Length: 115
Image (cartoon, rainbow, N blue to C red; front, side, top):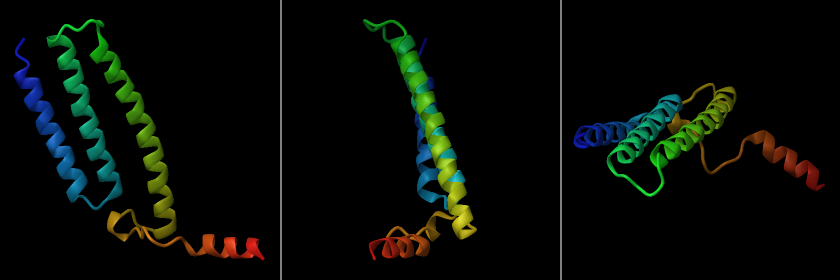
């Protein structure tokens, strides 16, 4: 088997995912681009497992399963954050997220607890 075709395909998928993360403003589309990058890594792991015979058999496939579990956990947490962002701001645009200030309700609760 020639491993060039899966490696080039994985590189294209990963590049498309990086482009999606850097250029998209919608948080759901950013999560989809991250999933695309993780799938490219899975393709590389499985291709490397079939072409390179290591001391541990099927180690690339096992690592690919771990990446799939990690991707499932990431999408669960990411979608929960996006849903909460939509409830607070009525938008899932990444550019509208303030990273330096806390929501008004959180600051008021802290000041009441300090008195």
